[in-house]
Length: 174
Image (cartoon, rainbow, N blue to C red; front, top):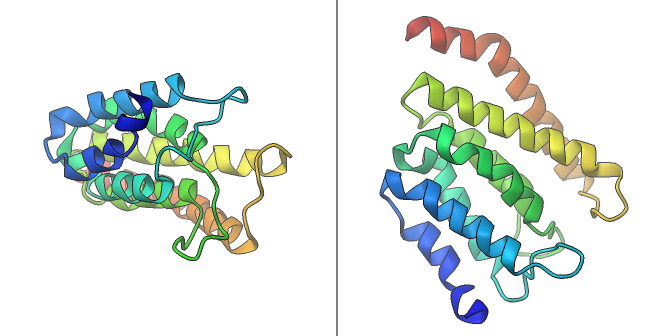
């Protein structure tokens, strides 16, 4: 069953457009990750195409999960980001999967209609960026390239700027 389900996950993520389905879908993905990890608690990515998964998840996040309340799905993004492989040596990957997902979620804040959804998305992005930055010195967690660390640092500055200027303007206009 494990081998049969793995190829379906990216397809499920990319084809789902109904907002009420996103939270249960992401819960299912996290359950899958938890059930099929190896002895070191790492997801077995040889069974699941990490590039297709990252592209599908990123597409949904750029669209703010098609209007699903961000408070229901944004808390699940950090465990997903922590589970992703950090492939930078692959020619098909412009940046590591965790950073691609976080950047897509950051872009998705512009698609969120409600202020509370924008705030939830920004909160999830800062959690993920903080996680990535704090994990940089751990030997068990491979290093990003200098370019990826720079992207991560710029994203942190954009988030802080949004907290100081963007969020108050959004709240004031609501």
